[in-house]
Amino acid sequence: MSSSNVMVHMHQRALHLLEEDANKIELLIEVQMENLATRKCPLYEEVLDTQMYGFSREVDFAVRAGLIEEFAGKQILSRLERNLAHLYEALDLKEKE
Amino acid sequence: MSSSNVMVHMHQRALHLLEEDANKIELLIEVQMENLATRKCPLYEEVLDTQMYGFSREVDFAVRAGLIEEFAGKQILSRLERNLAHLYEALDLKEKE
Image (cartoon, rainbow over all chains, first blue to last red; front, top):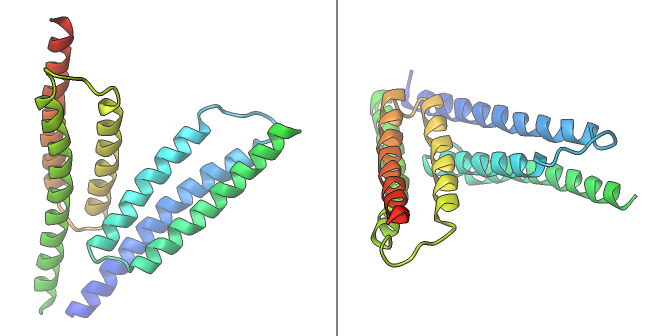
């Protein structure tokens, strides 16, 4: 492989790994959204915050290591943050019912 | 640069970044060790645990992305864990005084 092929391969692998990890958090958010009406797990907020923190450290490292562009990293994180914000809004509404 | 040069460069960069982050945690541990006799910050344990968790996620990602060998990652983490264990031992002894 040429050096640029190696870089492309490394970039793609890194992005793929980050997407996978982001999807795991998305799934946690979805599960919590679905359970909104039935039960509220008191630890979900802490678990999600911890997962988000760990994930943001991964993304930050990938950017610093030159594996992904800063913009790509921000995009993945923003998407998760938006979904998380929706969950918290829904939980707030639920509490006010 | 040849493809193997690119890889060596990426590996070195990743290791250097991880060493830097590990050093920051080492510093936190040292500061706490030095302050053992004078004062105990109630949040140090939580801060250190959070930092360790974030760092372990970085290391894990670096291994999965093919940037460092699993063994190298484990070595860096073990070193930190040993230092952390020393701190907690010292704190335990201090409490028993």
